[in-house]
Amino acid sequence: MENTNVNRKIVMLVDDNITNLKVGKEILKEKYTTYTVPSAETMFELLGRIRPDMILLDIEMPGMDGFEALRKLKANPAYAGIPVIFLTAKSGENDEREGLSLGAVDYIFKPFSPSLLLLRIENHMQLIEQTQQLQDLNSHLEDKVRERTNQVASLQDAILSTLADLVEVRDGETGSHINRTMGYMELMLREVMREGRFSAETRGWNVSEILQSSQLHDVGKIAISDAILNKPGKLTPEEFEIMKTHAAEGVTVICHIEEKVVASEFLEYARLIAGNHHEKWDGSGYPQGLAGTDIPLLGRIMAFADVYDALVSVRPYKKAMSAEEARDIILNGNGTHFDPRLVTIFERVFSEFKSLKAA
View 1 (cartoon, one colour):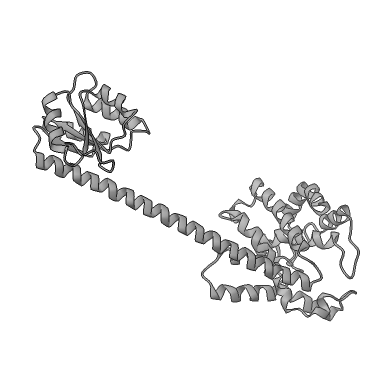
View 2 (cartoon, rainbow, N blue to C red):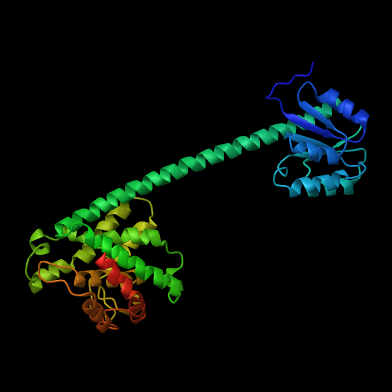
C-alpha cells in the first residue's frame, strides 16, 4: 500500500507513454507521493489543485511538448518556482542546452535507471530544502538585525532628546527651541534638496539624521555657567565672548563621543551644525571666522533656523519680534550674515516659518 504521509514530497510525472508512467510510479512510490499525468495540458489542469515539489516532464509529447510546457510554467509566478527535470529518450546536446536555458534543473534519459532516477530526484530535493532553510535563516537574521537597528535608533533618540532637553532647561527653555529649529531646518532642507542648486554638497545626505542631529546644535552650552546663560540683562562684552565659546565646546563634546563609537554619519552632521551655525557669510562670525562657502552648508542652513527662532522668541533680555520683523532682519543680512542663495530659499518658505511659530 502506498504511503500517504502528508510530509512526503509530491512528484508529478508527465509523460504520454503509459508504460513510462507505470514504471516511474513504481520506482517513486516508496519515497514520494506521485501523480502520473498523460499530457502537459492535463498537468496544468491539475496544478490548480495540486502543488508538486517537483515535476518530471517528458519533452516529446503530442500537443504541447515539454519545452512549451516549461515556458508556460516559468511565465506563471504561481508555478515558476517548481523545479522541473526533463525526461527524454534523446541525448542531443542542443536539446539539453535549450532545456537548461529555459530553466530545467536537470535531464534524465529514458529508459529509467531506478537508482539513478531516485538519486537525481533526491539530490535536487535536498538542494531545494537547503535553499529554503538558508532563505528562512536569512529572513530571520534580517528580522533580528532590523529589530536591533530599531532598538539602537530608539536608544539614540532617547539619549539625544534627554541631552538636548538638559541643555534647553539650563538655558531657560523647555525643549521648544529645539523642536522649532528642527521644524525650520526641515523647511529649509526640503527646499534646498528640491531646488537642486546645492546638489554637489547635498549628495548622499540623510535628511532624517540631519534633523535629529540638529538637536545638538547648542550642546556646547553645557560648558557655559548658569550665571551667563540665564542672565536677565544684556551680556557684557566679556560675558558674550564666553557665551560664544559654546560653538567650539559643542564640537569638543561631539568629538569626545566620536572617539568612543564607530564612525557615525549622525555625529558628523551634529559636529558640522554645532560648530558652524554661528559663522557668517562675510567672515565675521565665530568660532573660526569662516567666510562664504568655506562654511559647511549645514551650518549656513542652521543659521536661518537658529537666528529666526531667537528673534521671534522671548528671551530674558528682550521681547519677541514679529515674524515680519525677523524676516526683514534676515533679509538685511543677505551677503553679510547669510548665504545669498539661501536667503532666496528662506523667502520662499517664510510663510511656513511663520505658520510653524504660530503653531
